[in-house]
Amino acid sequence: MLDIDLHSHSTHSDGLLMPAELVARAFAQGVKTYALTDHDELSGLNEARQAAETHGMKFVSGVEISVSWATDTLHIVGLNFDPKHADIVGGLRHVRAGRHRRAERIAADLQRSGIEGALNGAQRYARNPDLLSRTHFARYLVEQGIVKDTASAFKRYLTAGKPGYVEHQWATLTQAVGWIIAAGGVAVIAHPGRYKLNNRERETLLGEFRDLGGAGVEVVTGSHTVAEYATWARYAQRYGLTASAGSDFHGPGESYLDLGKLPDLPYGLTPVWQSFDLA
Ligand code: AMP
Ligand code: MN
Ligand code: MN
Ligand code: MN
Image 1 (cartoon, rainbow, N blue to C red):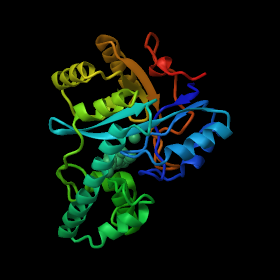
Image 2 (tube, helix red, strand yellow; image 1 turned 45 degrees about the vertical axis):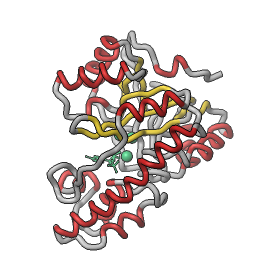
Image 3 (spheres, protein in one colour; image 1 turned 90 degrees about the horizontal axis):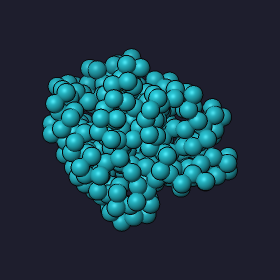
């Protein structure tokens, strides 16, 4: 079992726990090195860092940036950067502004399918008004009895081709990796097995990402099967990328993997955290 977790979400994005609550849960479950990686948002980092210090844990600054690449949305995790650096602060402010416009279009699309009040409804679940996520819409659809759980909300709504899904332009891969590197951090492709890419597209992405200065890929994540750990371990080795590990925990009952329950990295990989000063 790993005592490190470099991917999870608080109420500052689409998680259910406050940063300090998340850190306490991580500590209780054996995590010694922890990164908070809210979507497109850094506002939870101070609280998380303080809580980690209280528990004697190592804290790594983190973020999960939404990126449009080719026809897909990708997530790029930034780790161990300066959260005050103007490039990443300004870049993320712009990404969050786009979420407001997208949320209005999602609500309008749901209304065309007879679902009323989705914008207000989703906003009630968003503790951070600047960070309206599809997850908050999913919770509203559950509340209204339209679907039985959030997984069904994504299956029947909110995903490509379904009501409540709208195309959206996020940051570019170049921007996201650039902001992270400018702020002194390392960039990692989040849950690469989740994207619907064929082999050629995967290789194009890995090559572009590495050429931009990207450092690693998540190998162990709640989004991967055990078979995918092996697949992405091989890609990491082939492309000279480091390996990261994180649960992608969003809250009790909403996530596949809990904090502190990550298996070790497959043998022979360089952990992304090897380059961090965790002393
Ligand atoms: P957004 O960034 O607002 O488009 O929302 C993306 C978030 O929705 C992800 O970070 C997940 O937390 C959640 N999500 C996406 N797809 C699914 C799914 N199929 N089931 C459950 N949650 C999902
Ligand atoms: Mn999420
Ligand atoms: Mn993600
Ligand atoms: Mn995530």
